[in-house]
Length: 77
Image 1 (cartoon, one colour):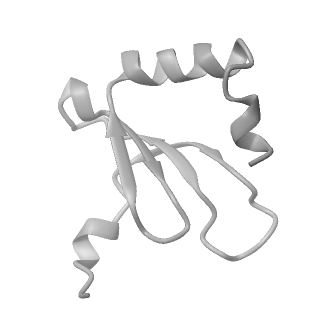
Image 2 (cartoon, rainbow, N blue to C red):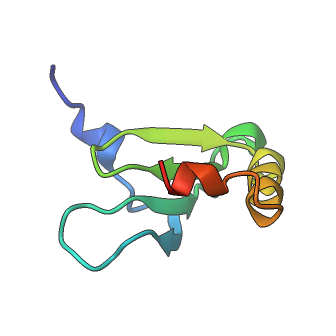
Image 3 (cartoon, rainbow, N blue to C red):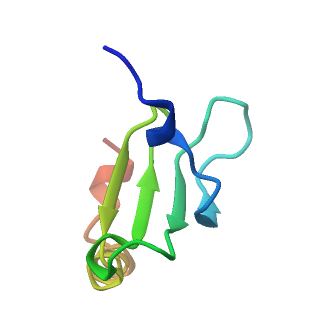
């Protein structure tokens, strides 16, 4: 598998949050891509170099689900 180095370039993204952050393992991060189309503006990266893109509305739905406790079982899986 080859990696496109431009696919991993996050320098133009606005950082919002780092999850973990207590190590140097490439922790998952949440970004806003200000130049992306509205349906791909929110970017969540994992520590393996992968990304998920979603709209702000989709992200807001995820936050609502988390706040309601519907994701609690995932945190203990």
